[in-house]
Length: 105
Image 1 (cartoon, rainbow, N blue to C red):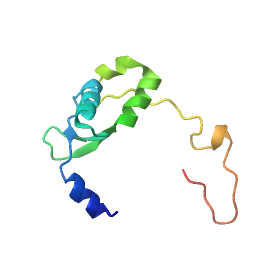
Image 2 (cartoon, rainbow, N blue to C red):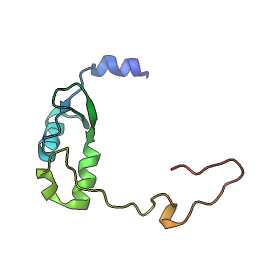
Image 3 (spheres, rainbow, N blue to C red):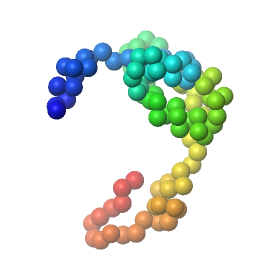
C-alpha cells in the first residue's frame, strides 16, 4: 500500500482545533469523528501550531488526573520528567557501542 492509495481511500480533509479548545472537547471530537488526532491551528487558521492526539490525552490523564480535561489545548500541564531522559535506560549513561556510533536521543 502506498501513501497515495491511503489518501485516495481516506481523502485529504484534515480535522483541526483551536488553542482555546478544552482537552475534553478535543477528546469528544476524536471519539465522535473516529479519528486519532487533531491539528491545532492559529486563530486565523493560517498557521499550524501542533497536533493533539488520543495518546497525548491518555498520557496526560494518567499523570495529572481528570481535572486536566478542563484545560485548553494551549495550556497543557507540564510533562513529568522521564526516567530515561538523556541518559539511558533506568538512568544509566549511554555506553559507547564502538567508534563513530552515537546513541539516539
